[in-house]
Each structure stands twice: as structure tokens, then as C-alpha cells.
Image (cartoon, rainbow, N blue to C red; front, top):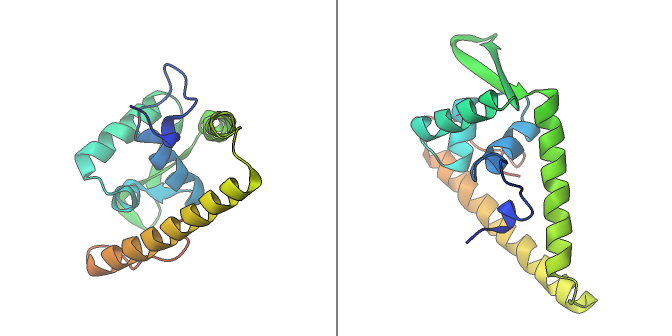
Amino acid sequence: MGSVEHLGEHPGAPSFAAPSVLAYVQCHLPTRATDVGHWIGVGPAALRRQVVELEGSGLFMRSPCPTDARAQLISFTGEGAEEISQAYGRRAVGLAELLQGWDGAEISVAATTVDTIQAVLRVGMRASREKDTSSPPASEEDIK
């Protein structure tokens, strides 16, 4: 069974975790892979597979980190930026089709509920990251 995150995805689209990785990178260009892993809650090995897949498909590129010779930064290629834009569009169309029978009141209640859930998740993620002494404290921008 899929999720809204996969709604409207086409065969051959990046794997299921890729949208989360792409979304984080989009908001934090360029970024370290370890920061992405902390944000989406995966370990280095799982994230490495995602980065290699996205790089191999031409969506990501790596570059040396100017402040840490041991680290690399990841960012989008032009194709990667286009893919994330198209993925959002595909999901919006699919979600609109699923909700076409809803009236304004139902949409409003659902939107309020989703906003409340997001707020709770942001607080929980911030608290979790602040407990993790190996990563800097989360900002509101980190968890959007």
C-alpha cells in the first residue's frame, strides 16, 4: 500500500524514501548527508543508498565541504530540481482527484487537523534533536 508521498508517482521514479531526502535537500541547499539522515531518521548506511541512487539517477551531485575536508555536500542537479517540482505537481493532482467529492467544510476540518499534526510533529522532532548531543539543535526551518 502506498502513501500520499507516493501518490501519482510513475514507474521508475526514485525509491520511496527519496521524496523525503529530496524535500530536505531542497530546503537546505547544499547540505551534508548526515544532516539529512538526522532529519528523516535513518542511519548512514540507509542514507548512503539513497544518495547513491539519487546521484546515479542524475538528481544529486556531491561537492567537497569547504569547512570540513572529511565531509561532502549534496545538492540538486538541474534534473533533480525539475523532478522535485514535477513530483509535487503529480501529488497535488492525485490528492485533488481523491478529495474531489469533499465540500469546503470537510476540507477545512482536514486542513486544520493536518496543521495540528504537523505542529505536534515539529515539537517532537525538535525535542528529539535537542536530546541528541551529536547534532545541533533544530530550528523551525530544519523541521519544515
